[in-house]
Length: 258
Image (cartoon, rainbow, N blue to C red; front, side):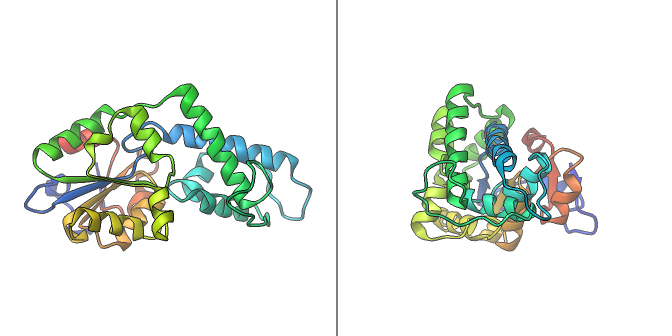
């Protein structure tokens, strides 16, 4: 476990999520509860690499293939169209916004986003998904202690992923991209989706924990005034998580059961 230097979370109590301190734990979905982060990464790479390959020459345009850093910085944890906007801007590409009804692959923000969703659903159908046993185990412990639990994800495929992995019944609230769109709520890194989910659980943000594997998500937890933000990351990414708002960083949520 990595603990932020000079923070109020410098001893072992930093990893203790107790009923005395908290009432609820709110989880991101892909990469935290389920293995689907790899499917999202593969889908984004398929779409963006194909787009860059056929892009007309332009001054300053960067045609390097989409990679894991691009995924982490520009798209991970964010609503689909925001991910497209962030990535193409990073490559000095100007792209028309289009319309949510654009056919998959049309060279607009919405068209590329829709193509990504099409590829992701095909990957999910072909490869399936699993829930991480250590995460499921910890959620089981939390629920036995009468914590409220929620999933808060930018993905509009949240229900499909939960159904595929068989863990929907572990959560009192599922707040996904469809919910955010219906309510007109900004996605991560804005804190709004986490704050709205906490309200649905009828808990104060200071009495709730956020668990995230995305930079956008830890920023949302920090800016939402949550009592504890747990980052899930390997050693190479721990400092970046801490710098962006995580109070502690673990490599596996099994560590929270120690």
